[in-house]
Length: 441
Ligand code: ADP
Image (cartoon, rainbow, N blue to C red):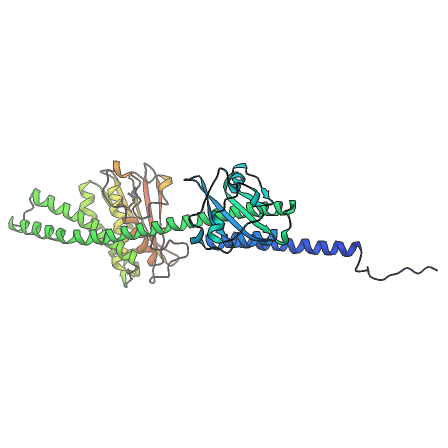
C-alpha cells in the first residue's frame, strides 16, 4: 500500500515563490493606495511637492528627485522642488526648453533616460551649482494634464550605480500622471482660496462703505427735514408744493438710508429681538397707515382680510413691522396705478401666515429665488424705472428668519405676486435649518 503524504506544502519551491510574489504585489498595491490617498488629500502645494519627491525616490530607488514646472509666460521650466534643497535656493533656477534634458522631455512628451549625464551636453548644471548635488544618471518623465504639459519629474542617481530599467520608467510615469492631477488640484484650491479672500475683502469694504455712507448721509438729511418742517410752519402749516416736494424727497432718502442702517445691524449680528405680545391686526393697521399715502398717490387700493381679527402673537414689533412694511412698499412700487394690493392673514400649525398679494408686474420665474439676496434686483440698473437699493427683501428675510419663520414668493410675471411669511405665535424660535444665515453668500 502506498502512503500518500498529507504534509503541508513545503515552504520552498514554486508555491513559496508565488506567495512571496503575491505578498510583494499586495504590499505594492497597498503602498500605491496610500500614495494616492496622500496625493489627493494634500492641498498645500509645498507639502505636496515634498511628498512627490519622496515617493519618486522611493519608487525608483534613487538618491534624489526634482520637479520642474512650466512657466507659461516665459516658456521656461522652473525648479519647483528638489530633494534636500530649499525653495529659495532654487527660486531663480530656470531651465530653457531648448537644448536641455528636461526641455526635451517636456517637448517630446515622453520619458527619457540618461545613463551618464556628464556625457550629455544637454545637462543643465545650474541647479547642481546651487544645491551642490551632482547628478550621474537621470530618469525624467513629463507631467501632463489632459495632454497639456505642466512640467517634468526627474529621478536622479539610481542607488548602487544600477541602470534605470523599463519598470522604473513605467512606475515613475504612472506616478507623474497622478502627481500632475494632484498639483493642479492644489493650484485650483489655492486660486479658489485667493478668490474667496478677495471676495471677503470686497464684502468687508462694501459693508464699510455702507456704514460710512449711511452715517454721513443721515446728518445732512436730518437738517433738510428739520428746515423743511420749519418752512412749512412759517407758511402757517399750509402745505406748499415746493416744501411738500422737499419733504417727500427727503423722506424717500430717509427710507433708503434706513435700509442701509438696518442691513448693517443684520450684518454685524447686532440685531437682537425684543418680543412683546400684540394683536396682529394692529401691526397690519400700522403698516397700512404708513403706506396709504404712497398707495393713494398711485390710485391703488389696499384691502385687508383677516380670518381671525383678534389673533395675538409674541414677536418683535419693530422687526415684524419692518418685514411687512417692506413687502407692502414693494407691492405698491411694483404695481401700476389703479392696481390692487391685498393683505391676508390666517392661523395654522401654531404659526401665523401673512400674505401680501398684488396684481403688479410679477417676478420672472428665474429670479424668484434670488430676489431675497442683498442688492438683487430684477431690473437691470441701467434701465431702472423703480427706485430702491435692493435691500428690502433681504432685510425682511433676516427679520422673519430671526423669529424662526419662513418667507417666500409666488409670482407669475405680468400678473402679480404673493409674498408670504410665517411667524410663530408663541414667541421667536431658533431659526429653522435650511434658512440662509443672516449674511448672504
Ligand atoms: P428694491 O425694492 O429696493 O429693489 P427689494 O429687496 O425689496 O429691493 O426687492 C428686490 C427685487 O425684487 C426688486 O428690485 C424687484 O425686482 C423684485 N420685487 C420685489 N417685490 C416685488 C413685487 N411685489 N412685484 C414684483 N417684483 C418685486
